[in-house]
Length: 483
Image (tube, rainbow, N blue to C red; front, side, top):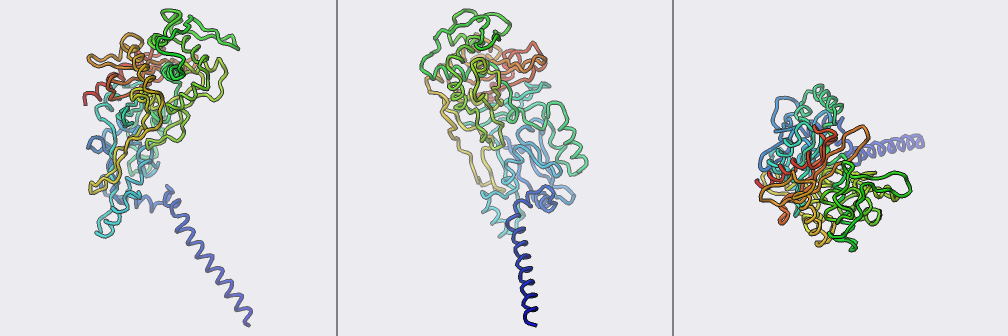
């Protein structure tokens, strides 16, 4: 009789331990995963039942939670939603979240460890929990200038404060209205997402940070930097500049824009940058070598897959093992070179800041609901891209581009602008991308900017970076300097 009882007791004990183990596994080990699961309705009700913190530009909320009369309690509302969509992204009960709404979710919901004492105070006082406010680095006037400059054209603009890395403007077109996705009408939110996901230009994806493009002649800044850093070149060094450059190991050639020459042959490095001479820079790239070009590109931020602002940023790339013809093409920003608009703004910002590349960021500070500051972003050095001497030479050369070269459309009366144009080929049946990157004032840089207009925008195949992108950069610079 005792033996059967012991067996039953043993089975019961095993079952009890299994039950306790399962409950422990679910409640403790799997809890974070289950809470984060978008299908978990309790998580949705809990998040929406509390006021999500606002996203703020210059003291004004551009995203905030407002009370509504439904089971969720609060709904996300966006002011000038399309203007700031590349920064805020969206927050949706059906489609999840993107951009800053996703990257700063713990702060906005109040779940961040930074807000532990705020949560403890709410528990003690019985106050309803509220998320923290995320204050951005954006300058409203610069954001509007960038958006108005792009107009109906597809592209992106990024502006950075060189001395700190603060992102002053970040616009991607086409944008979208996050309010259409924030609705609590599940069918309407799902339909809006489907429409946007299938729309031309993929509005839900930020061209400023998540899309890479051939940078074209704006990459000549990197090539020039590599040459100057080698110690074997300076701005006055003469380079061969034929009308067409025969490439080794192939019958292919590289020509200059419009099929003409560069004004002289040979040509100084400074003048080659000023008129954007392809043949001179292609030969220079082969002479400097792929390894030196890659190392220089990496010091500017290329090939870094870990960069966040805090949103994820696509990796800008320099090809790993190009042969000589591919190196020539890479030196003028073609072949497999790919860069985000943020990356090219970082190149100009590093040159503007005496060669020091500051880590870019878009969150200035986080404030708890009682307005106390729980975190403040401090500027930090990402890398030393070039020496101060090289930065000074590049600055003078870039000033020449704007004052008497391919970038004259960026000139601002009373302000010395340093810039570089780019016209990047994509395919034989598509118009080239129009690029411009610059900083100003050249002697006391306050802003660095990069602009891309995809496939030439309204100018189509007639587009150049100087004609199409430079005026947009000029407007953004003026907005920052006038703010």
